[in-house]
Amino acid sequence: MSANSATVVARPRPRLGRLGLGGAIAALLLLGWTAAALFGTRWVAPGAAEIGAGSVFAPIGPAHWLGTDYLGRDMLAMLVLGARYTLGLALAATLLACTLGTTLALLAAAAGRWVDLLLSRGLDTLTSIPSKLFALIMVAAFGSSLPLLVLTAAIIYVPGAYRIARALAVNVAAMDYVAVARTRGEGFGYLMGREILPNILGPILVDVGLRFVYVVLLLASMSFLGLGVQPPAADWGTLVRDNLGVLADGGVAVLAPALAIASLTVSVNVLIDRLSGRQGVRR
Image 1 (cartoon, rainbow, N blue to C red):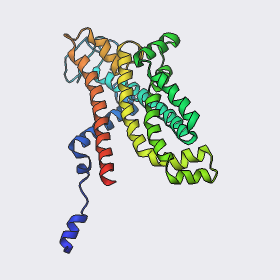
Image 2 (cartoon, one colour):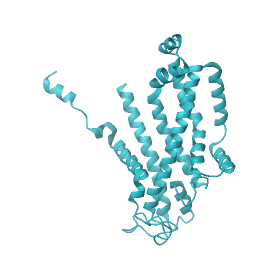
Image 3 (spheres, rainbow, N blue to C red):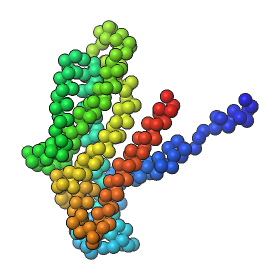
Image 4 (cartoon, rainbow, N blue to C red):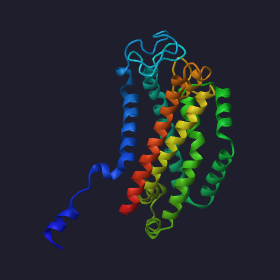
C-alpha cells in the first residue's frame, strides 16, 4: 500500500457521517428540548403563558408563532414551559426505575437460587397489573402530585428494567472470572459492582434510553386522562387534553404538543438506534 493510500485510509470520517443525517437531526431536536427544559423560563416573554395573554385560538403570526390555546396563552411559551415537566418527570422516573431494577437484577445474579426466584416471581406479579390501572389506583389512593407521578411510573417500569438487566447479569455471573471472585471470598457488593455491572453497562444504557421513551408516553397518557400534571402547571399531555375538545377551532393548539411528544420520542429512538448500531460495528 502506498503512502497516499495509507493517508486516505487513516483520514477520519466527518462527524455527520457517524450519526447520519437522521441522527444529526434527532440530536438537534433532543438538544433543543433539553435546553427548553433547563432554560425555558428565561426564554419565555413575561406574561406570555398567562391566561388572557392573547385572544382565544389566535392564528399563527408574528405575535404568536404557534397561535394561542383556549385560554389565550401563547402555545410556544406553553410548549417551552411544559418541557420541564415532560422531560424532567420522565427522566427522574426512568433513572429511578432503571437504578432499582438493575440493582435488584445484580443482587439476583450474585446471590442466585432463592433470592433470584423470590425477586423474579414478585416482579412478575407486579407486571400482571395493567399500567394505566395501577396509575389510577395510585392517584385515587394518594392524590395526584409530581412525586407520586415519578414514583408511579418508576414502579411500573421496574419489572421491565429488572428483566433486561437480569438476563444480562445471569450470563455474566456464569463466567469463569466471576467464579474466581467467588472462590476468593468476595461479597455480593464486590461481585455486583466490580465484576458484573461493568460488563453489562452498555446494554443497560441502551435500555435506559428506550425506557425513557416509554415513560414519556405513559406520563403523557396519564395527563391526557387527567391523572397527571395538574393545573396551573401543564405538560404536553395536558395541553393536548385541554385543547382537544375544540380541535376544529384550534387545531394548532392540539397538534403542536402532540408533535412535540412525537419529536421527542422519535429523536431518542433514532439516537439509540444509531449509537447502539455503531457500538456493535466497532465490536
